[in-house]
Every structure is written in C-alpha cells, then in structure tokens.
Amino acid sequence: MLRQRILVADGLDGLRVLRTQLVVPVLVTDLAARREGTGVQLTWRQSNRDLVTVSRRDDQGRELRLGETRTGAWRDADAPGGALSYRLSTDEGRPLVAVDVAAAATSGVRLEPPHPNPANPSSILRFAVPRAAEVRLEICDLRGRRVARLVDAVLPAGEHVRRWDGRDELGGAAASGLYLIRLRVDGLQRLQRLHLLR
Image 1 (cartoon, rainbow, N blue to C red):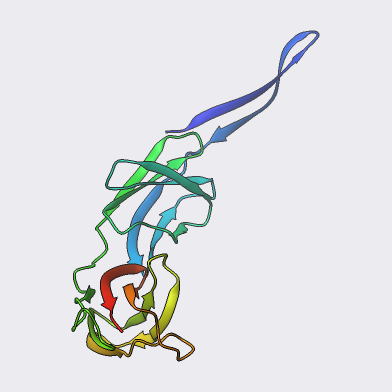
Image 2: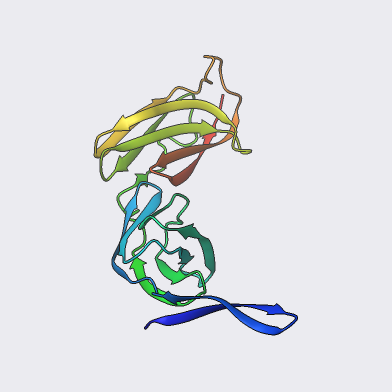
C-alpha cells in the first residue's frame, strides 16, 4: 500500500504545501533466526533501507524493544535460553513479520553430582557436553567467588572427567566447608554442591 506524505507550513497567509512525497512501506521477506552460542542471529531481506524495529518476546510473554536497523540483520547477544519470538515492525509500529525461536538445546549439557561427597580430600567430577564448545569448570565458594579452575578450554563433544584435589588456585589447601561446582558451556550454567572435609 502506497501512502502520500504531505509536509505543510503554517504561515501568516494560511497553510502552504512545502513538499509531497510518496512513501513506499518497507517489505520484509525471508526472516530467519538461529541460535549461535548464547545469542540469536536474525537475518532478512528488505525492499528498501527504511528503519526496521526489532523486538523480542520471551516465553513469559515479556516484550523488549531491542533496537532499530537498516541492514537486514540483527544479533541478539543476550538472548535467554527459553522459547522466543522476534517481531520486526516499521518505525511507526506497524508489524511486518515475526519468527519463533525454539528454546536452547540444554539437555546435552550435564554435570553429575561429585563422588565422593563429602570429599576428603578429593572428589571426581563428571560432566558432558553435546558438541565441541568453550567449557569452564570451576570450584566456587558460596558467594560465587572462584576457588579453583579445573577447565577453561574448548572440549570435544562427549563425557569428561576431572578430579579436584581440594586445593585452591595457588596450590594451598582449601578450607573445610561447602563449595559449588560450576560448569559453564556456551552461556549455560550447571551447579552441584560439594562438601569438603579435612
């Protein structure tokens, strides 16, 4: 649908037409969305270089206006892991197109309970990743401060085993108490508790 925009000025002698222009609304096609690491990459084709507003609705129904672009692409770097819906609209708020994105695949990321637990002085930690990914496995105190880092590398898909010997990053003996085992894979996090006895 074509629209005509008329720009007018209010002068002493009445309204005058300054300029008229034909407005061709943007046409968006081929909207696609895919998860990449912790984010979602959106791509589409658009008929002109008008501004397109990008919005996201999460699985709780909360809608967030992410921003505007003319490029035919948008990266939502902080996309939550649940099911999402993205909507493109004109700068005037007229909806253009929407796409749904499935929840992030998390079933393959697994952190098993440590064994033995309580540990005296060491414990075996087993975890699995569904595909090659950047992996961090850390021992933290209850405030979330890192005590020891056991893995900080890209690991292949599959099951992995690490042993924590009850020592901190400097090689000293960690104090008796409750610790968190934190596994981070592609922005996802899994936690287990470990009781260390000395």
